[in-house]
Image (cartoon, rainbow, N blue to C red; front, side, top):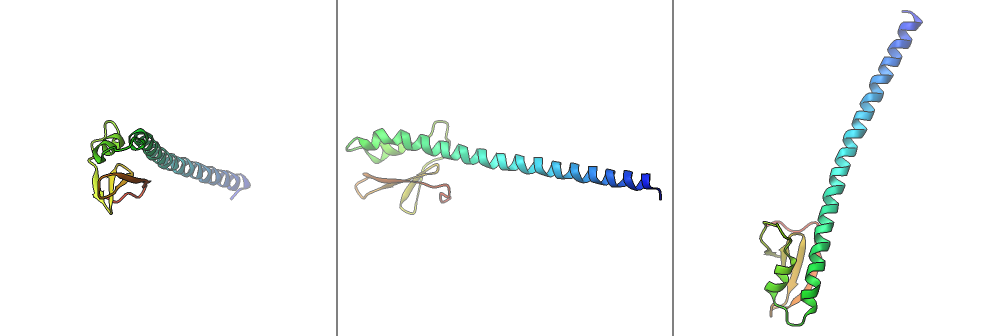
Length: 114
């Protein structure tokens, strides 16, 4: 085997390996960006919900239904549900006392499923 054949084979193998590495990096970057965007969307929704309930809970005597209605995001088709003592509206958990008065809100990226 001549030196030129060995050199060409080595360069071809190096090029193929390099291209495979770059393809993997691009694929991995796309997945990472997708997860980052999903996290950003969830955080944005939580912030919107939290800011929308502030005026309602600041008002004395606001009802449970008023707080839940304020927490609902426009165009959200899911219904609020109760689990573990909280009413979950999206990723926002709302806790009410026995009289239906708001006690606290928790942000739950790991909100329980129905």
